[in-house]
Length: 147
Length: 147
DNA sequence: ATTCCTATGTCAACTGGTTGACAACATTCG
DNA sequence: CGAATGTTGTCAACCAGTTGACATAGGAAT
Image 1 (cartoon, rainbow over the protein chains, first blue to last red):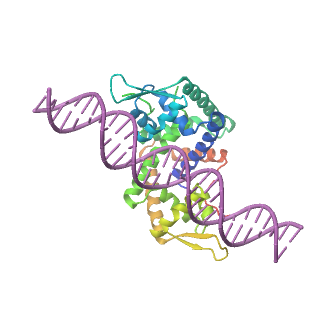
Image 2: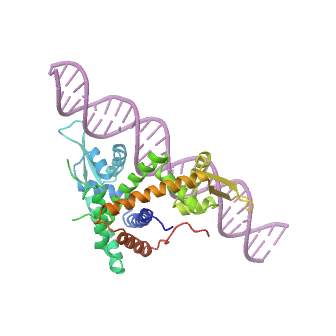
Image 3: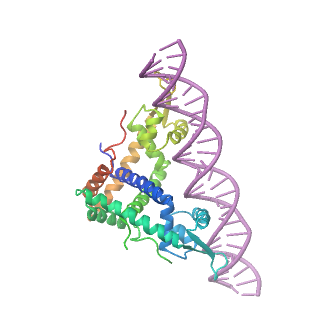
């Protein structure tokens, strides 16, 4: 019996994640998970902790714990919302934007190199299948909307 | 700027994992991660902890911690290798085989339903792209080999 | 045989997530 | 207004991984 397609998908993802993690770590001294979190924060500047957590696909508590070190390292600012006693407004700093720009471009370049170097890979075909799959599974076409 | 393909891949996987986890949990009272671990164990019966860990893509320590509860619950047996003082031989019990058979078939059925219900999805095309991607990334064509 | 190197399983400490509870604030409804 | 209800961020406790260290067992080389 051959390996289920879902398992194959899984292995491919894990390999890509590992690769991306090494790259981002090596070139920016930051975890891929952190990069992802900052990318979400950059897509919704000024969001509060709750929507940031939703956007990043984690619990409120996890987001809440992640923020202070990122503020300390100069990637984010967290200020109380003037119109709301308890809510925080989280915003990326220039440093975060720089990181996201550089690392994002680098990763995209690596990824598309893969496709140009290996003509038997068809990015458009893969992407189309993934997008329909996402649609069928009921995922939003793009995450990071403000309510 | 549109979302990087690698991010899209990620979201699709996460959604599928969540779905699979709910299904396996509901119908078999077991975590999807546990199901995956048992599936690996079933693919290499009699393996030791180290190769099990490699097969499951986790550290030796993680595998070592995972085994005792599974033995307690009657999914695995762990016996010292007679030819090797320190090595353990891990083997799935009938209960594990039953679980893997049932849950595996169920998941595959769900997954291929997705493709038959949505003709704009092309499993062969997706699979072919994934397999070439796996090859290009240097992944083995199928995990679970004994050394 | 002794020595040296490698493999094996486990441990302790750490990490980054989870859930459930909670106080503080906001909002809605009589 | 005041009371019930809902939001928001944080905390404690837990869970399942990780790394690095380690005692112990096998095998190779001299």
